[in-house]
Image (cartoon, rainbow, N blue to C red):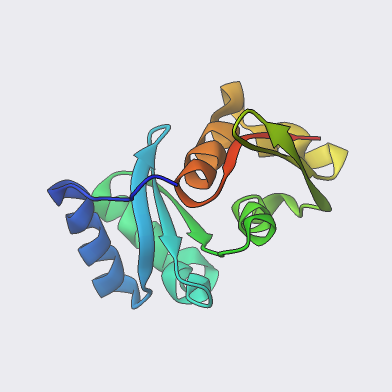
Length: 141
């Protein structure tokens, strides 16, 4: 796994996010026009706030879409957390080059949303997984 490092702009986002929510940030980066924030396990409810109020305020303040994901050391749990909103039913892994490929199974009614317009959600998921696991690609079934 690559070493995760932050530039000053990202450190600023992390500081603001932690100050405003009380959640501890494990990772933060920009992908597909949104700020992706991984919070330590157990802090996701703190980060989002009741009914999403905290993250909505931060979106307005930073003028950015924000995706909050609960971090997990276990790759399967991390994949499930990334696709949390699409109620993943199953996660399977297979070999892919020097790493692994993850296939997430969701309800067919949610499949298009889970993939996102032009694969946007898959690109974000892949970016997270490549930073924190040996998973190099991901698909939705």
